[in-house]
Image (cartoon, rainbow, N blue to C red; front, side):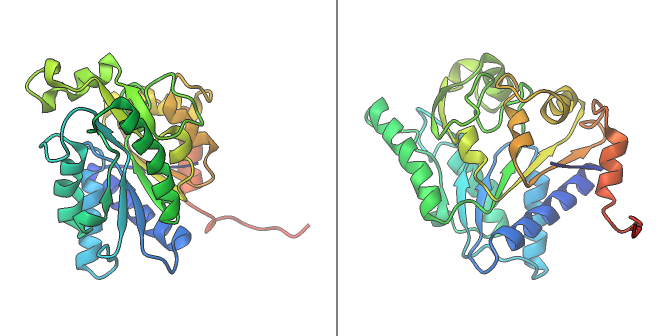
Amino acid sequence: MRVLIANTADDVARIAADNVLEGLANHGAGADPVLGLATGSSPLGLYRELARAVTEGRADFSRATGFALDEYIGIPDTHEQSYRQTLVNEVCQVIGLPAQQLHTPQGMASSLQAIEEAARNYDQGIAAAGGIHVQILGIGSNGHLGFNEPGSALRSRTRVKRLAAKTRQDNARFFDGIEHVPTHCVTQGLGTILEAGRLVLVATGEGKAETIAACVEGPLTASCPGSVLQLHPDAVLVLDEAAAAGLKLREYYDDAAAGLSDMQLRVL
């Protein structure tokens, strides 16, 4: 796990985007990009920086495939608060990823059984696309990744989940009151997320400091789903100073981020 700490939100966005592009080069070399996409405020700056890379000729997402982390159950994918519509607006129209190449979990069907079957098929669709090269992530205030709430199995697959009360409260600002926030969702599982080639997580603000500390330096536990990132061989966390405030090993992370350029090798 690499922990990169920046001074400003703009620096966080730039560093995170650079790590996404590097991850695509390392894990998807010679193939059309396959991106795992997160919604929320945390990755918005990252998406703007990817758009800048497209404008500057450093990236091209016209042949990319996108897989959403999650989707609400019970609202159509054309609803303004559906995660599909959010990603169309905030990602497809920003970085040039064709909307027809964006895949989202099925949150509307004639029965729960149909939604569960579609969830199982979602993992198969990711595999058929060659796997996700880079998965972009935010993290919830209770440590959730996607909608994997505390208590989620660390090897879980895409499935139906009940939203925690805290998550619904956090998301109520996007709806006309908490009574309109869906109670269930379909989310990629933690096991599904861990199969991506690289994970790039963005977190900013003092409200994420305790969660980030638990994710990075706490025990591996279902009580903090984000701690599963400790198992991934290529996870990159990009934080601002406020989100990094609870880290006890800050000096080490800064030294590690400096790379190998200053390392002196001695032949014994």
